[in-house]
Image (cartoon, rainbow, N blue to C red; front, side, top):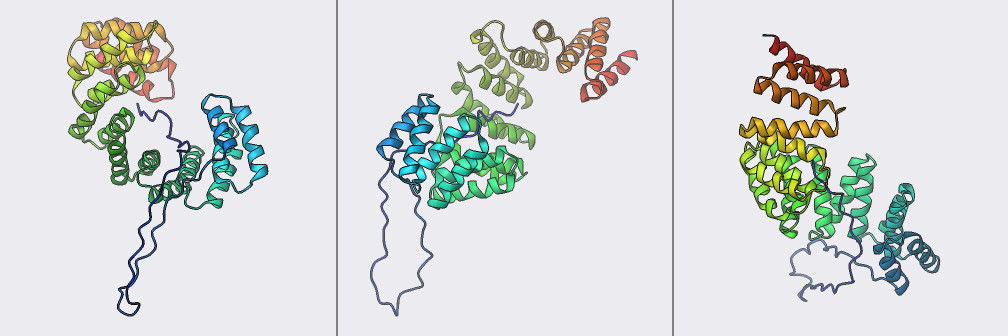
Amino acid sequence: MKIVDGPLRRWPAPIALLIVLSAGCGSAHNAPPRPPPVEVVSRPAASPDVLRAERLLAEGKVDEAKRILEQALDADPNDARAWLDVGLAHEETGDFAAAEKSYRRATEIDGNFAEAFNNLGVLLREGGKLAEATTMLERAVALDPQLTAARFNLGLAYEEQGKLAASEREYLATIDGLPSDPVPRINLAMMLLDMGRREDAAVQLRAARPMVRGDVLLSIAVGEGFRRSGLPEEAVPVLRTALSQAPEPPPTELLAELALAYYASGDLDAAEATMRRAVGQNELDPALQYAYGSILARQGQLGKARAHLRRAAKLDPDGPYADRARARLEVLKE
């Protein structure tokens, strides 16, 4: 399970004071070559109307906010912050083409507006334009290295391209900026597991563990991470706590992951009972049928195991679980 929890879009922050230190005066003949000018991130101020629209967006009143923003742009077509906000409004209504145009317009008006480059990069990545998305996100991070949203999104983009060292750098920078947010830690842990770095993944999972109490989805991810790290004894308590907090019926994914953790820890009876409950909630899932058949086979309930493995193959005739189920059925014949 890869936990992204939604790419991080950046909502405009209040305008901040930017202090630029200029070089001291000296002889033009003896002075060393000047370094290239440092670009200063732009944080466009918001007009009263734009501020009102932003409050409406935060309250979920998208149509009203959009109307005010469009009026603001009629009055000032070069208001980069209004273009950013109207892009957010378009995204909320599912008009992604209009959102992209709005974000691009914001970056054209103000080439140092890091938040606009971040939002454009997120939208492009979600639209499959990964190379251009990466360029936009790199621009956002170059302008504002403290913009954790951009660093996290750039980490996602790098990981998707297989640039794992660069992705790890961006995830770690995000963690430094958001030490109490479990999401970047979980994403980094899952990537480290894919790289075979179990111990490093466990470090991040242990740090995230106290942060996910009360969040069932994130608890499932942490539990899965511990199981994949070879630490089912740490997975089980996380998942049991999540189960005690989940509504009825609990998420099938939670039951399945807890069953797998029990199985990995050697508690076959608990694994069988929990996976049986998961299968009862979704009998048409070939992965659940396969997992339950495997648990039953390990218990020695071979007749029941064969029935569930055959069901898995039937439900997924051309998929991976059919091949796995058939292979396990061949083993059971022996």
